[in-house]
Amino acid sequence: MSILDAIRAKLGPSADVQYAPGPGRVSRDLVLVPAERFRSVSNGRTIQGLAGEYFDNNRLEGQPRLVRTDARIDFRWTLNSPGRGIADVGLEPGTSHDIRLEYFESTGNARLKLVWDTGVTDDWRAQVASAVALAERSEVVVVAAGVEEREFQDRAFLGLPGHQEALIQAIAATGTPTVVVLVGGSAITMSSWLDRAGAVIDAWYPGEEGGDAVADVLFGDVNPTGRLPITFPVAEGQLPLYYNHKPTGRGDDYLDLTGQPLFPFGFGLSYATFAYSGLRIEPAEMPSSGTTTVRCTVKNTGTRAGDEIVQLYVRDELASVARPVMELKGFQRVHLDAGEERPLAFEVGPEQLRMLDRDMRWVVEPGAFRVMIGASSRDIRLRGEVTVR
Image 1 (tube, rainbow, N blue to C red):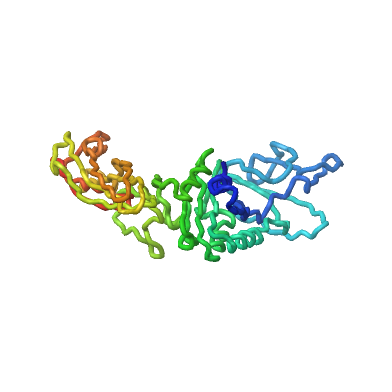
Image 2: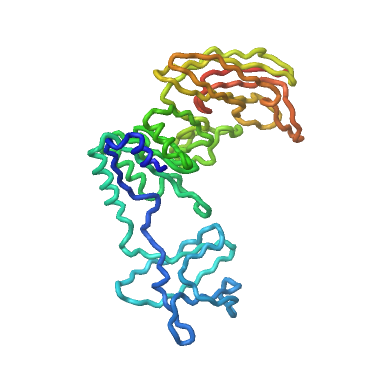
C-alpha cells in the first residue's frame, strides 16, 4: 500500500485527503535527441539512425574496426563521464542539419550523450504552484520525497534531486504544518529546508507494508524507535564523515562549516523523552581476561509510552596502534511507560575491548578504557572509565 492510500485508509472515507503530484525526483531540463530525429545515407539510400565508425586509436587513423548504425547517442561504456567540450548549438524549428561527432577517450572511461533542449520540459513550477495552492487550504501537509538510486545512478550531490527542495520550501512557506517523508537508502543533505519542516521521517525503502508503517508513525499509533546506522552530513565537503574515525591530529571544523554531522550515527527521535542516570562500573579494574558490568538507569520522562535504544560506546585511551575515537560495543532496546524507569546492565569484557595489534594478533592491552552510554554517538549521557591491569 502506498503512503497516500495508507493515510486515506487510516482517516476513513469521511476525511478529505487530497493529493498533488509535485515535480518528482527527476528534472528533465535536457532530453536525449530521439532516434526518429536522425537520418544517415548508406549506399545511396537514406536510413534511420547515425552512421558510426569505431577506431582502435585516438587519432581516428586507418580503417575503422567497427562500422554500424546507432539509433542515438547514449553510450555508457564504463562508469565515468566524458570531459567537457561539447558545444551548444541553436537549431531552428523545421530545419535539418548535418552532424559529425568525433570523440575519443584514451583512459577507458567513456560516457557520451547527445541531448537537446526542446523547450518542452517538465513544467515543475506549475506543479509546485499546484501543490502550494493545495497546501494553503489544508490543515497539514505530508510531502513524500526521495532520491534516485540504482546501478549507474551514484549521486555527486546529496540533496534531494530534481526540484523537490523547491517544493518543500514553497509548501513550508505557506505556514501550514509540514511533514517530510524521505524514501531512499542513503544520506540526504537538508540544510536548505530542514528548519522549515515541522518533522522529518526517514522511511528508507519500507517495502510492501511501508505505507501502513509510515501512516502509523504519522498519526501516533506507533512511537518511532528507529536509529540511524549511518551519518548524515551537513554538506558533501565533510565526507568521509563517520563517528568511529581514528584520531587525526587536526580540528574537526572547517573554515566555512562545522565538522559536526547533520544527524549522527545512532540518532533518532521519539514521541517520548528519556533521562539517563546512575552510572556504575563494577569492578572498575579487571584483568585482561576478565569482565566488568556497566549499569545505569533509564527513565521515560515523557507523557506516553515509548522505546529507547540505549547505546554503549568504548574508547581505548592509549593504545600501541591508532584506535577509533569511539566504537559502538552494545545496545539495548527498552520499553517504558510514561514515568517508568528501569535499570540496565551491559557486560564488558575481551570481546568489547580487544583489538588487532601491529602483528595482527587479537589482544586486550592494559590501560584505561572510556565507557560511554547515550542516545546516539553525539548524545552521550553518562561517561566513566574501566582500567585493565
